[in-house]
Image (cartoon, rainbow, N blue to C red; front, side, top):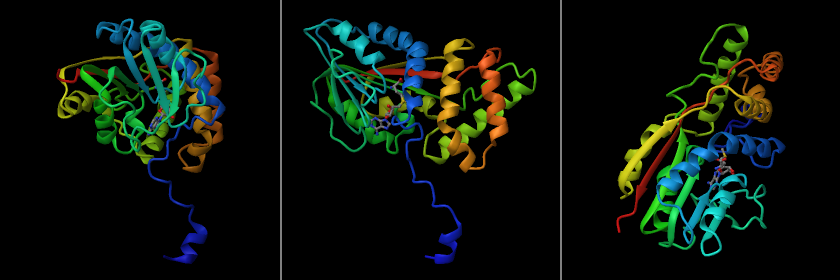
Length: 275
Ligand SMILES: C[S@@+](CC[C@H](N)C(=O)[O-])C[C@H]1O[C@@H](n2cnc3c(N)ncnc32)[C@H](O)[C@@H]1O
């Protein structure tokens, strides 16, 4: 090791450190707007898979309370919902579902072979060993139980503004590219969504199918963007990927509300453990 080099170079980014840390105040805002944008999509898929009273569900990397609450309402008092996260502090321990700290990569499956539905949204894209996380979730299913995984495919639609009509839209797209670069450096796979059907078949699931969607415009997209950019601001600056002027100009344009911001497609994939 070269001591003089260590003195001038910043330490390397720890590989796979989760960029959007739940300890930050903006994490709660992000969960609110993710729920507004995607909870309806998630509920629709879960209902089509047969979600009903009495089901046992595991919500992996739950983040905020939106999905666990909806699952708890659907399964009722005869069912059970377990919500886990590496940092479960945004979950409500009196919300009608069980809350546990759990790392889907490192920890064994809770109650293996027992769940009717295991769901993870926007989690696997961030974790270092996605195959292992998937195997843990599959091992938690009862025979015939469903796995529903939803993750972004950012390369499929990388823009923040589809209609790049002026400097504010161009700036938004440049900043989105910078955030993507930061996430890639932290180990996120920007093409993960498209690999999910194949990954679920490889994990031994049957009846695998998928759908994709992305919102265009609206308050929830604006608020999610503002919270995300504020959250990663220091990381973007430290990485030399942008500067304060660009970030401030972008946040002002987001607040003005006429960028019609959009997101990467959410690819929802489901498959069943053979009975
Ligand atoms: C982008 S947020 C998505 C939250 C929520 N699933 C949603 O869609 O609104 C990712 C969540 O995954 C959690 N997470 C990251 N790595 C994890 C791991 N190895 N095991 C369990 N949860 C993890 C984070 O703490 C965070 O709450």
